[in-house]
Image (cartoon, rainbow, N blue to C red):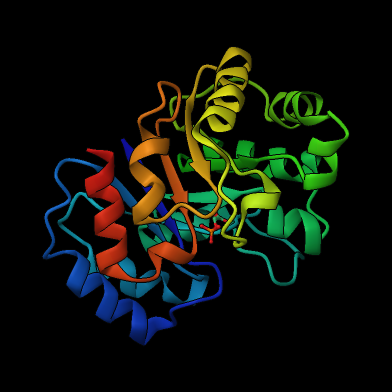
Length: 231
Ligand code: PGA
């Protein structure tokens, strides 16, 4: 069971230090936890979680080691900080910052080649689901990622469920996860309005291997409650 906390643009260095100091004292009951703070908060998270089993990952990563790419961060830079992995291809980056299947895949392959662990996000929009295109979208997005890798995890995040309070039903999540696993032999996380109240039902599905949690991961108690639900 893997629970990844995607803080998005929340928790600067100070709030990160407070959060991580509290989290390291908590019993996570053997659930693997990864926190994904904003770039500027990564050093504090790495320092404050050192010596624990809790991983620290970035929310994005470029594929090259260095170069003229204003605003980007390289896999080598993350490695230098002691960061363990990165999210790539999140739907907010696809929707608002021009991320494509191709750039998401380049980020994933570059990070994997550098020895980072990768959470690659896929998922259909509401319009795509209504048009009956969910399967073809998932096939295209997952297909673009290339081959399976021990360090590659896919997060199924239906765009209509992210930050909306509208979680996929456990049946819908299971159906999508089973399709993704038939395409790529990887761990698959569910994401989209996961909270302590709905986590147990979602995480009980046979092909749901964990969760990528946004809003409900911003509070330590709520993240720990989701881990408890997953046990
Ligand atoms: P949410 O975000 O849990 O706030 O819906 C999930 C995500 O975007 O990773």
